[in-house]
Length: 334
Image (cartoon, rainbow, N blue to C red; front, top):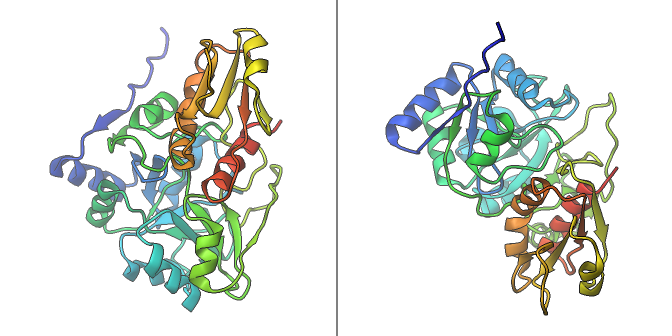
């Protein structure tokens, strides 16, 4: 007889009863797909190494790629990290919000969470349902993006179920992600030399103004290896559709109109003129925050539409453009 397939994950509405059940499940060592303002995450008790090991197994994530630990209040920061004045300054300004800080860790953080390194990635999320779940669980929660490793990040509960539905049991429905891109990651182990490791909704310029000093951007990505990474989100190929993606500085509507209909063309703004059914855009007016919010959802839709190739154009400008281009660069890497 064939082995019966595991039932697909159940999606829970954010009722008080459901949140209490999911909090108990997390404390018992289970995994829960959770909404955040950035993308959906796959949460486990960050202080339970057995539970965190399940995250790596469910995602197919290498143990060299550390996890971000999410906290509910600033009081929890000292439990898992050793903050410095610069970190506290940024935390008070940008938390709750899409900023992850890399800091020296405390001994309570399991080695599997930090890839064996003496540092930890930590942030305080802003999504109200996730915050309520964090408070009810009364534990810091490790939560990378809730997708198979390397694939496009999920921005809805249905995205999570499509990718991990037979590997996990519970998903909390929190609506589409407000921002659509993962958090900004800043290395503050040495507060005199802050380094941007991953651009996000909080720009490098905003962080530099808050700290009163320039912030270097790591500016390069790494290939998979046996060496532990200081932060998640550094790999060269990531956030990638299965359909080959070709990145262009600019797309020309004339080129798109002359191509075969088996190739998709993804513009930042809606092109002017008569458009064929293989032409898409991220925001009708070219608003970069709107484009960032829709990027992953649009890539997922195109990946499932049967196109032979996806052409995408880079965003121009600073702030959100830096984050959009970072994701597109890695989505197009081979």
